[in-house]
Image 1 (cartoon, rainbow, N blue to C red):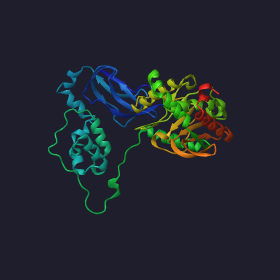
Image 2: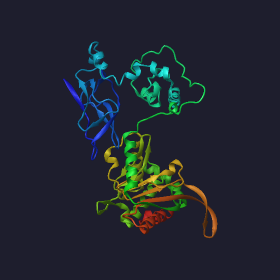
Image 3: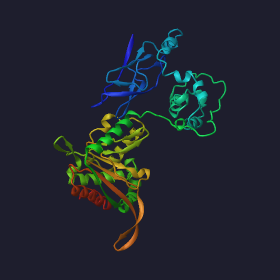
Image 4: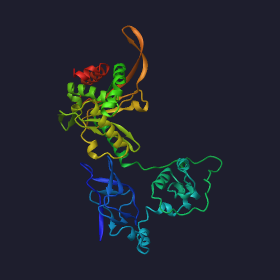
Length: 410
């Protein structure tokens, strides 16, 4: 009797996923609740666990396949390791769906056709002979993706390689540009990010206003209290909590920035779920800090740290990233001095933080050196007037330059 491995509910407004990676191959024994396969949706990567113990008898949705909710991904047959080791049925089962085991079965293809430079570097760093990897690139060349897949595949008795073969060198003379190109399919997350950002540009009347903030007082306060803060709360005091608090003050004063357009209506949000943009190896994600106005500095920092870790580990759920009312993006961590962030639709405003840089400023008629940061507010001009946008950004500036305003709620 076989047990079906089904695609779980993917979340609101998500009806399809892509099979990203199988962690088991046909014939492997599995335990109930053990992770078998990873699915990639428009928003997150989901793990599908085994519904029962037994042996992975068949893979019905190969890597790269698009599947809908409740689709059958594969079958688990009864029996554990003993069933997997049975001499007769195992080869017959693995012969049919072979997509998972195929790269190890034909090492000669990559060796004879050459290796892309990026693939050769990754293989060298990992101590792997690229000749043992089957290439899927043009003319059978080994690509970076082939090496990554090979390193991620289960290391179950790889076929022996007679002798390391030298990487094929390009012949002397002009090289064809196509030979130096590598085509990698966009992940579903990257496709979605690209489509939504372009849609935001096409739909909203997007405009950006700029200002700069003197970070002297925030930095002084942070340096004075960071050790006590971490000792008491178990989390570091960063700059992001100050920005979240400053934005909350401004959002309550200028409610249009916390609103969105739906058809011919304006929906004003009387709650404050702040999205914090996080860059990950697979693309940009925006997890949401819920009810940020009900939190103190410590709780905000803890929430941001937890969400950031989940984002980097690919553990964010769909619930973690839906329903934000306003977004903060920190390009300064990458060294950006100034940029114009794109709206996170359907939100009407997004604040861009940037690098803190010492610059000469005139203070009280004297030229002094101050740590300055450029701020950028991109907004939907259909709902937010220029006066409101400028007032919002000025209020954020005032709160950061005088952090006691945040603490006293004035």
